[in-house]
Length: 459
Image (cartoon, rainbow, N blue to C red; front, top):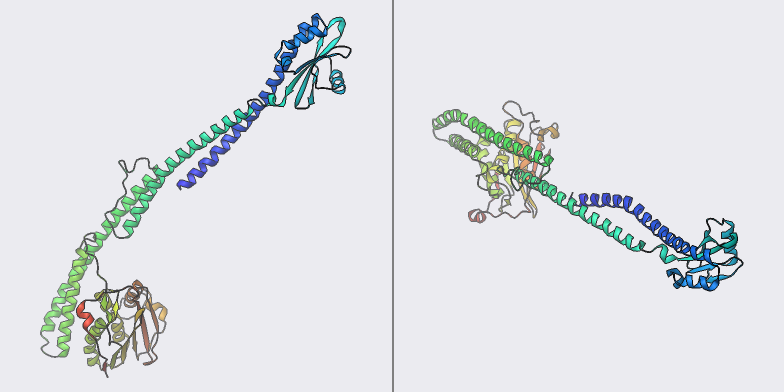
């Protein structure tokens, strides 16, 4: 913008300067020509009194020598009858042509190096003498070059002043625009406390339009902070409402007695309570003061843990299951809780959308660029895979929100990966493939790096 304003100022000033200075320069040139011929006419008229008194060549020669033009051999007198006193530069033909133009006004003829002004002067007995004054080409343009230089200097000075003014104005506009853009980027990166100064020295010189944009930006930022605070309070309130049914579940789970199913139920209730507590703490935490999130976990450990959790329900429903590819650690650049929630969504879909006794399998494939998790089952598969992965578009029946696969998709895309839906080649039912990109280096805790897994198979 700053450079554009400078170019516009240069273009406008140059056009204005040319519109005024070129005609002015032509007027100066015409004035110099008129001045040269006027001076020549005055010098020719100075010989009129002498020619009126005498036509003696010696007297006229002395009169010529007494003038500036005569001393410079630029003045001559053509007497009646043909005699010429002084240095002439015209021939008889040019002289005759000037005489035929009129004895009262004479004329101007072109000669070598300039022009000859022929001025008729009356002498005795009604005769007419012709005074010749030579006007050199240099006299016609005397001072014109200097005038053009002065005018050019004025034009350059005008352009320089306009550029300085435009650059100054552009700098103020650009500075204000950059300040607004910097604040917008900072707000987009999560700095909710950023505001654009609209008063004081920092905002001095800003255009009124950018001031209005700054006021609008500050109002928008305040509104965002207010909405986020309201959203956090709403999330905390809604999560807190879950405590009552969770308390009932915990009491009922405690009354189940011993057994694998009872232990799994109590473990699930305890984990649910921890998740609700975490949601409440996170919702009430000011995002400005929130600690930075550390990304990175072992995908093999998380998946092994979640499969083991769902295996208890699989045994109760008589579902054969299999976990393969979990031999070596597989670091991925995601939070442990997010990956666990995605795996739970995938396995929960298997139990929700397939009949009791339907087999399922979880396969991990680790490469240099990523980790791929395949969850397949022996159910009916997807009737239409496209809506299943869109947020809220899936039809999972009673108790389903249609958000499970969308959560998985967001997790994969956060690493640069993707999610693919298809049919399982081994089991014949639905298969969901999740690819997590691991090109970003992930540092695992030391205890996780020491662990290694074995193939777990249950049928």
